[in-house]
Image (cartoon, rainbow, N blue to C red; front, top):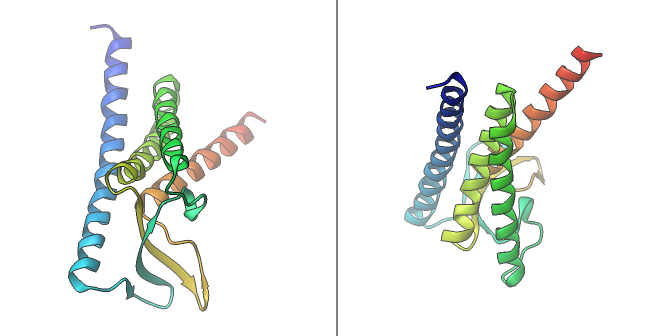
Length: 165
């Protein structure tokens, strides 16, 4: 087996593993949270002065934008699938290991939310960060993974850009 083929298999294994781990971690947290709220018959759970768990069902995109139950919902879902396919394409095109890892984290998070859009016809969001009366948008682990992946991509690209200057 040539070195290039071996590298391709390794990249496939590593990126697939990261995507699967992110997807499964997201699924576990969502299933646990849905069961927790269903079994205890409430929608809000106080943890501390900065964090609550509050189960809501998001029929839109990030941060509840574009809420819809019409054909737009399905078009957005198809668009999200297209973005995931494009990210997977980028994973296999990149020569940078950090990009492959961060893109895989983004793809795993996006796959988690797409699964919910298909399976539940909505995405369960439950992490409620707040300070006093100011609440951030309620989000889930997939949203967190996507945000972390994007943030790390930007930070590493800025670092690499500064190193070239």
